[in-house]
Image (cartoon, rainbow, N blue to C red):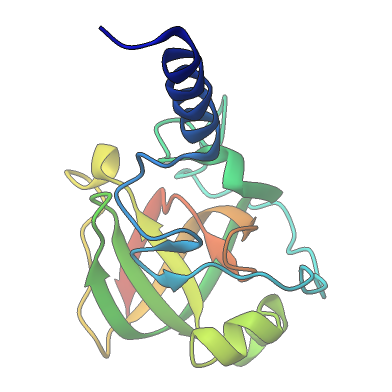
Length: 169
């Protein structure tokens, strides 16, 4: 039988561990993208105009997004174009698409996009949309539609989730 002081200590330790996230699968301060960004959030240079593209959705722009609290919606539906530089499937099921934006949209990235994403805007195709929003190939020129957000965990700007993606010529 566990003595009362030891039981109280283990209970307190369990509560602290639960609140601190000790049971998480990754290292503290890290996720599948590597170390979490610890600096001040970079400035957002420009807010893109609201798009009227038919792919724009009503309701919660972050519906079905994994850990939506980490994302700050800047524009609920934006349209950008650019060239795909990298595609990676993430542990949360999202397809992570890096897009080097066309000159008309180049001001929609920040310093963190330049340093941590090689100057690309991140676009995330979430599992709930993968039946209708297909991942492009590296080198494709694409048009992306979806919420323009700041990922506060990483400090970079994204289209997340990508509601529409089409390869353009």
